[in-house]
Length: 305
Ligand code: ADP
Ligand code: MG
Image (cartoon, rainbow, N blue to C red; front, side, top):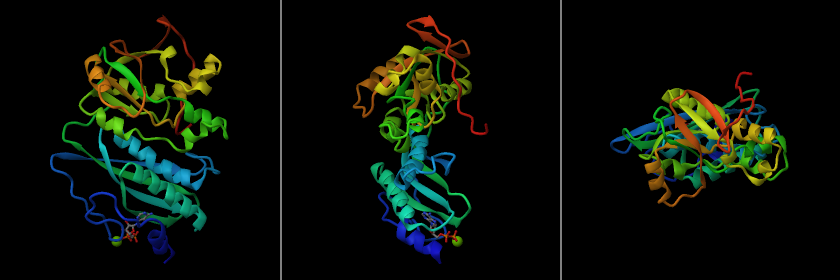
């Protein structure tokens, strides 16, 4: 019984877009627009592993949605709806109130409906969200399309979330707790970017996925990495550790031809873009500082370390 009252109280708000049947039946029903792919992804957050145990419930709700919308954006797609599978150790109404408000705040900001899910009891707080979106058939921006000579760009600033995790209470903790999925930019890059990924595990590792999928290499200018003021002031080694290996930023990293970059810059963009390097024929990742070879040491994030 408790399960149904939780669903009704916290997870049964009005849909904000076209949903034929949402929360309340055995499955939800949607009508896909003609000539579009269904774009679908899932992401799990485990308390104490993906967010510190003392994270505000509102932030947990926001971030659980944001990380999924970021994956939809990284395909160039438009987000439509989410499903929420929630495993709770106990019923804590204050927590559920904050969590559901954060979840709906992120949904509302990006025009997404919560259309279903599952609610269970379990020893660990675990949140799995599945996100759905649409994109015109054949238009998805995958990881495998990078071409030699393409520019490598990132949105916003990188390394902030990792800095916020280490320095809790610093203003940059906001970037850890409330990441902004780059939904609008993602859609603007459809038809222009040759490959794309969202940065969840650090720039070096995530760009590495593009290089591997595209069978190319890259050279990165470390002096062009977009850093916020707090990071800019750090000693070099620490600065590059955050920027190259810090996870949880949810900025977009994409490759684009110089011609398409000019077309992109003619549009109204809601976030800064920085060119950080170029795609090369030589495999692997090389670094330059002021045009000179630069050896940089950093440790990446390992999910099963
Ligand atoms: P079933 O037993 O048929 O799987 P449930 O009793 O688990 O259905 O769920 C009832 C309805 O509530 C379904 O529409 C389901 O999608 C929805 N639902 C369950 N948990 C959640 C949740 N945490 N968030 C949103 N919708 C939920
Ligand atoms: Mg059923």
